[in-house]
Amino acid sequence: MPKPVGHPGIPTFERPAGDLKARFEEHLRLAGGAPHEVSNAAEAASKLAELHPGASALCSNVPELRGTRGPETVGDPHELADVDVGVVRAQFGVAESGAVWLTQEDLIVDALGFLSQHLIVLLDPQQIVADMHDAYRRVRLDRPLTAAS
Amino acid sequence: MMGPSATADVEATPVHGGQGARSLNILFLADNRAA
Image 1: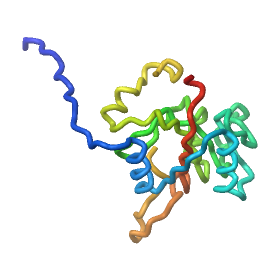
Image 2: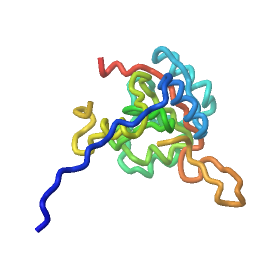
Image 3: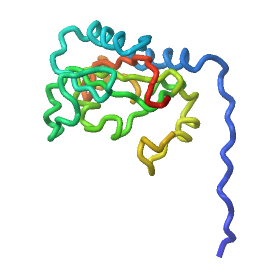
Image 4: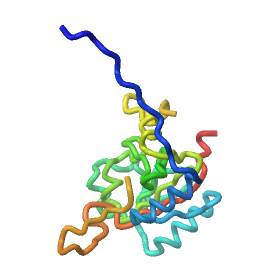
């Protein structure tokens, strides 16, 4: 019987210096996304209208932006097939990749993330981590969102 | 999620929206729920 050994330690990795938000924006653009500054819900609504002036079906999961329907009205994910714009809030962003972390609790109906023709994602700029090492420290798959932070 | 849906599988021509959203816009807005 081999002698039990402890798990290896996780080292702290060197990270490039600089502003996390700037790095997030740079990598988001490289991935094909676009960042926008808004200071309140009214500006967010204006930006949404500016980005998608022809949108008629908006499904919003966030209180800051009103959609033409909410996820609570969706009985079958197929009902989201006609959604022009889906709106969700990400738990956090990752600077090294420009990615945002979304769970089923954020999407409420998973199909919103891939049936929507366009996605608007709200992100608190204070909730940007440097890399996936930090991201994995934030992710708690065993607990709901409300207890994750 | 990293960027909008994108593929260049067919003739190396980039296409957005093949399997998901055609565009992804991030709005930086503080989350007041956390306050």
